[in-house]
Length: 110
Length: 112
Image (cartoon, rainbow over all chains, first blue to last red; front, side, top):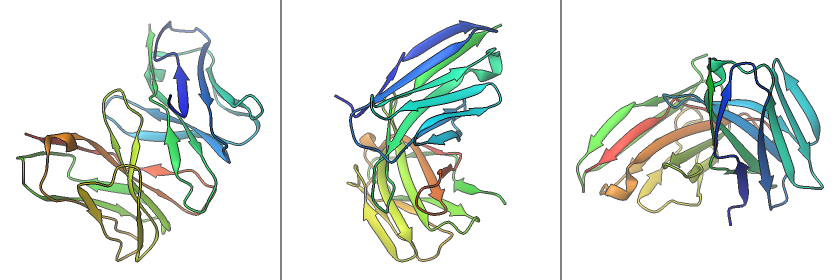
């Protein structure tokens, strides 16, 4: 079993829909990251959080440390949100190595 | 700032050839990482460095070597390329413990 599990693996939505992507992990962490990877490959960090909730524009990330679960929400989805969304957890220690989920492929249709 | 840059963007190697993937960052970050991304798999850590002159193995180091002679550069060396090394390689850097990582654009490598 992977230490970081994401669901769903694939998601198709209509423009304007509210989207939720889930991430569960089985290890102790110091922080959780949400990343976005567009077709063509570049990876961009969206959020880093260790508790509670963060919001940036139409994106909201939440984390429940006790339940070892995080969600990424996209409100009023748009075709430009189509990408792979990756959850990664950071363990302790000075090197801050990340353990990555396999990603959720989101396609938002107009 | 250019951020994290990687060269080349694409490369095709024959089995047994060697090459170096270049990674440079201009943000004065201490921490640097090399990952590989295979279809359907999460990114896997190959090697990392916590500062100039210091490197260590990640999850999947076999077949690779790194060096870190300067803060800016963290090249990844493939000796005797094998088809199993066909992948997309990402370099990343981080300013200090507890901060987000910045990724390069990736190098798509095919070994045939």
